Image (cartoon, rainbow, N blue to C red; front, top):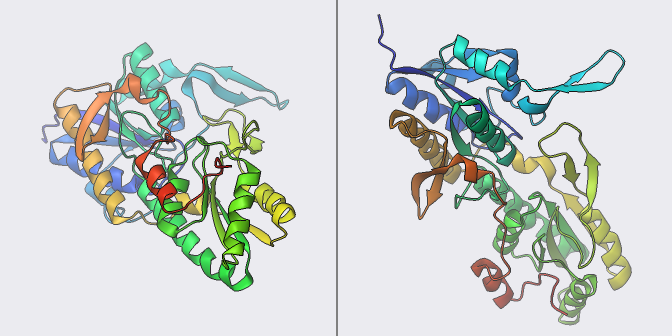
Length: 367
């Protein structure tokens, strides 16, 4: 009879992200290699509530390292502390299902839960730890790169690479048609994707949530380029960018989600405004979910593997209620209760922002 050191469970929560499967690959292989058995939870916290879990083997993670998405499935709606039930009449009621989760974990002898997710999922993990006594280890996931307590979240490098390629491709059509081409990228309230892809792709203007822009300053930059004989301009705008004194552009509201406010459409708005101000034809491309799909980059695959192994090492060491994190290219842990704090934003004095300004990139705040 095989002597099992302990029983773990792993789930992927929130939005999909390149590298989820790479983390799962590392978590499962490291756990099995150290003598643990590990359950995979289907569809995030929903699987914990519905008791949908399966024991994972080496075969379950074979070949998944380069695949996008998550083989376990995910959801960004099922908060166990406010779980939504749709009644026959269409009304919605809410219940606290946290004790259901505790009971389902106990039925299978699961001692530790590994939560791979962003701020919403990690906040729920922290609440399960704090209020229900569940031993939780978090792994930081989001293409936005805005989680506190870590220098890099997995998925960001891949999203940045996709956005940079899009900027490269827009250059050719912008130059051919003498247009203003605007690329709207994700990032919610943090401009990391826009900043990095804009610099890497050679954008002329980068607009991010942390630096409110003046429309006249953007138009002035474009017209100055035209006067210098440069008949096209490239703008990269984060979905959460907003004008000075204005509001972010909200596409829709999704009830019962970790992230109910869905941003989007600022690129189209900018195209119309700038075309009217400058007289130059403007077009907008919203990159959207393309940033979250596909195979992760080599950097993300390595980071995911390091994070996954570190999560199991924390478990072996009895280091619970933590999130694995990256600092100075070394993997460590930070308290889970701090991981869902204030988002890590781009500061106006950021070195990359200053470097971009030095080479003439406009952030819309210069009059």
